[in-house]
Amino acid sequence: MRAADYQKITRLCMKYVLLLLRGRSRRHRAYSVQRQFMWNDLAARTQRSFHVQPGRSHRPFLKSSARLSRDRKDQAMKATLLRIGIAAMAAWAAAPGAAWSAGAAAPVTTASVLDNCAAALAGQPRTAMHGCLDTELKAARQQMNAVYAKVEADLRKIDSASTPEALRTLKHAQDSFKSFLQKECKRQGAALMGGTGAGDTEQACQVSLIKWRTTQLLEQ
Image (cartoon, rainbow, N blue to C red; front, side, top):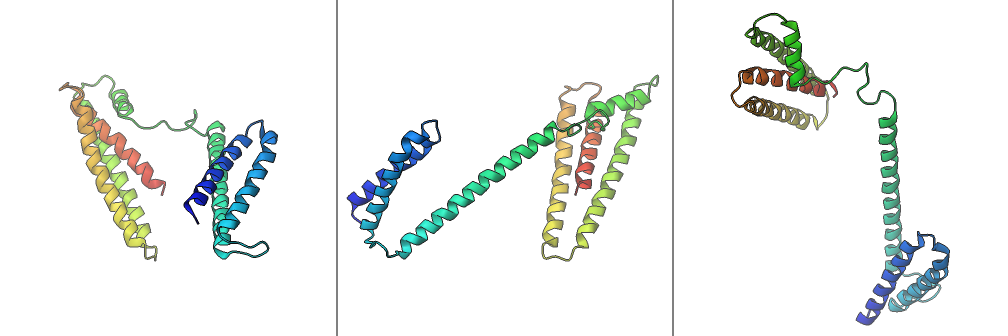
C-alpha cells in the first residue's frame, strides 16, 4: 500500500469515527446517509489497496474484520457488565438494611471501646481503666487467634496445587496486620501529645483493630 493511500484511508477512518460519535446525538438521521456513503468509499479504497477482486475473499482482510468484530463484542460485554454492576450496587445501597441499620451492631472503634470500659467502671478510680482494657485486649486476641487457626486448618484440608500459596498469603497478611496494629495504635496514642490517656488509647485501639481483623477472617 502506498503512503498516500494509507493516509487517505486513515483520514476516512477518522471521519467515520467522528460521524459515529455524532450519530449518537439527536442529529443521527441527518448523518446516516453521509456515514453510509463514507463507509462504502472506505471499503472500496481498502479493496483496491489490497487488490481484492469483487466476489473474492481476502483472508488477511477477513481475519482483521473478524478480530474487530470480536473486539466490539468484548467492549459491548464489558460495558454491559459495568452497567449491571453499577445497577446492582445502586440497588444494594437503596435496599432497606443494606448499610448499618438500627438493629445491626455498630462498628467497634477506639472511642467505643473506651466508652464501654468507662461505663462498666462507673464510680471507680481511673486507674481501673487499664485493667478493663487489658481484659478486653486479651479476650480479643484469643478470639482472633482461634479464628485464624480455624481458617488456616480449613485451607490445609483443601487438596489443591494452590493451597501452599493460599497459606503463604494468609500468613503474610496476618504478619502485615500485626505490624500495622502496633504502628497505628502508637500513632493514635502519640496524637494525645503525652496526655494521661495515651496508654489507654493505644490499648483501646488494639482492641478495635483486632476485632475488625477477626471479622475479616470470619468472612472467608
